[in-house]
Length: 126
Ligand SMILES: [Zn+2]
Image 1 (spheres, rainbow, N blue to C red):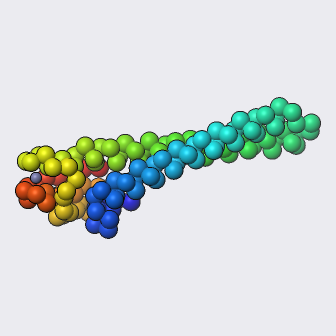
Image 2 (cartoon, rainbow, N blue to C red):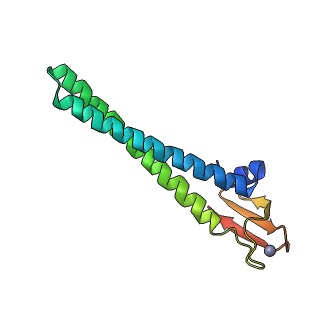
Image 3 (tube, rainbow, N blue to C red):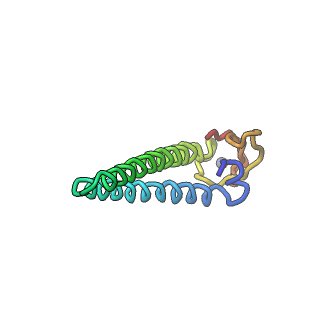
């Protein structure tokens, strides 16, 4: 979910929590794909016919592709969430994550926020 939409719908803390949960769900999927790769390689090594071996190797390729996609999503979601979280401290009073969304760019990746404590405004980019 884009930063502006996430803050508008859930607030910053919930958006951040959801991004972390989503990224770690992708990491769990990477783990499952790794098990799939190892299992299909094991099955391919003991396959009796070429058809079985080909289907096992195809499964290996599919698990590898899905695992690489999930690993990429995990890293992207985690790095974006961490980059945004590092900008969530109010530059004026250093309060963390107590902010209101004031304005969003058209693509929703850059927002102007205001501190709930001191009303200072600053920009957060994702
Ligand atoms: Zn402040």
